Length: 221
Length: 220
Image (cartoon, rainbow over all chains, first blue to last red; front, side, top):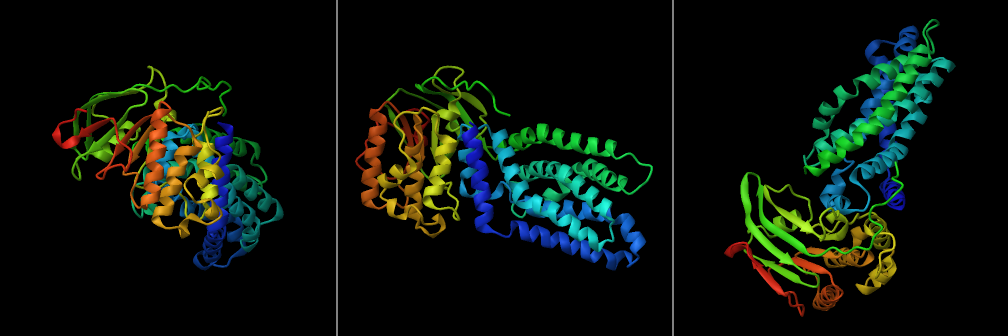
């Protein structure tokens, strides 16, 4: 069973590298969102420094959704999803393997780009570290929650918008604690541990629950 | 994440396939009504019927991919997980265009085969068996429909599973490939496998032991 898990993970990574663009498109979208923010709120460095973590988190969330809607759709169209139902690997673990590969190929580049984009928002070194770490901890939760939306809209053509509507409300807790974890580093009196602990707990809860929900949705197709 | 004890270590012995009073709905329309048959080890069933008679629906239901309205499908003894004993060949080939033929097959071998499964071919041997060994390193997206079909058929050989559900297996195949696959179907039944094929055309030199006509009531 573990060899099947690894085989699925490696297949997804191989497809991502062959097709290309999944990482660079996400990062480019991330960059665009961050770059247009100063045009909207005005070029006040103090204001940007204060709302920077929130902008980075919002942009990362939207960039995540951009890439996730095709997570199961290609498999459904080509018939691979039917075969995954019959595989010796339980569908729940297949969802985890696909999410893991998606996280490495599409989310990790966003996390790595975050400190550079943070410079554009006048973030201090400590804030850069905090926002990057909070994205590193919280982004697996975004991927897993998004996988539920992708599974629910797998048979909907152009289901990307519908998926965003389904997923965004569920991502609110991650957003709240992600931003507060990132912001706690700059505020003098706030505790750094509590928001990080809750963010990590959300990621682990997503890992425990979302694969079951996504697999159950895929079985309905 | 890994369960320590795999419950499927015992040798696969999935027979008979028992279908009782099967009713399946698609979009609120009752497509299959009271379909019933029993297939013992080594038996094969050819499902015929006009377009829309429910051939593909029957095969998807047998594969466990559709909810049943009523009735029962049982493969092997009670409590066996039927999905790991089933090969399902659908209209869609289940191949990713950007991967090579060999990569696709290696992936499905890892996903579908059971540890210690006897009589399984390696992905390269399976490709050779469908005459595609020279194209092992070609991306599937560049191959023709018939060649893709042959790779999908090769998937049946890389994992040894007792029940074959074949939906129009000969689509896009040339006459030579048809004969070869007919032999493979015969070999599968001779080795104790069960086969259900939905098809409009005769299965070449393979003669199914039974026929189910979905237009004339659901009895084999």
